[in-house]
Image (cartoon, rainbow, N blue to C red):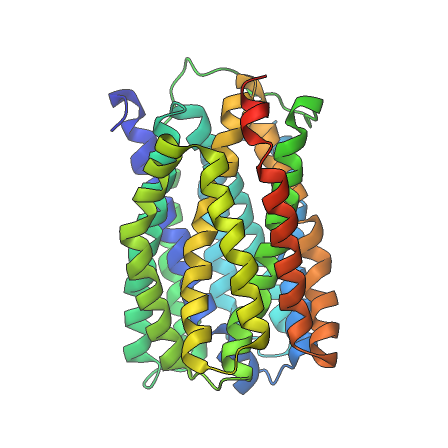
Length: 379
């Protein structure tokens, strides 16, 4: 699939991907039910927490300066350990402020790992390899999520939320510790700039990244909450939906990477955003429990298409710009993310349809900008 000398990095990223998505899926599967049943949070509280959860993503540019003192792969391992600690503590603090605190911890871990994961993948794999690697790692994330979803489906009636969070946190942190002792690096890689990089020629990458973050936050903050709050999905139903969702993604994700190589980023992203316009409108206006569940699955599938934004950047980037640009890109991705969940939470209280209508409009704007990709690549 790729050069032999990159195998160590692929194995390293595989282990960290298993850790990251074990924790994230475990947290997501029970969080909304934990928030409603144990912490007694409302829609506005959820919006605030989801906004706070994205603050570490907004601060991802700080990764550039941390890399002055520690290597990228080592920081990736430490980020996963922090993710595990935050998840493990969640059940011990079942209050609004307690959930905010643990959410910040786990979010710093996840967002910093994701920044470094993207950077390392784009550095260590070629333009034809990177989409495939991204797709395979997403497939691994999906099968990992299936395993966690199945476990939670069977244990939720026997273990408390506190215990589930604790076990998940210990597992994630343990995998992070294992990778601390690995060195997957190559010595002949281009040196990465240790400062913020903004270039005019990256403008379309910045724009697409910004709108992708805005659309993603509406999905993350309100789609599952809609299923639980309006359509009365139980934790076992949500778990079953996640399993089905990730089973589909396990088979589809590798094909997305291949599709990017075959059809190009513009066509792949056009399909994503054209479909999302419809999906968000269905969220807003459908009264069918089954139809909305199907839209959630489709939404999650199209979320994986975002890898094409990163591979588009790889094709126009200077070799030394990748690490700082991934950090800056993550910050741009989360500008709207910090604001939209709170704003959307307020609008939800007024009318739950409004955040999803906003998502449809954002998808339309993204669709328009995506049409400019081919022109930027050939410049």
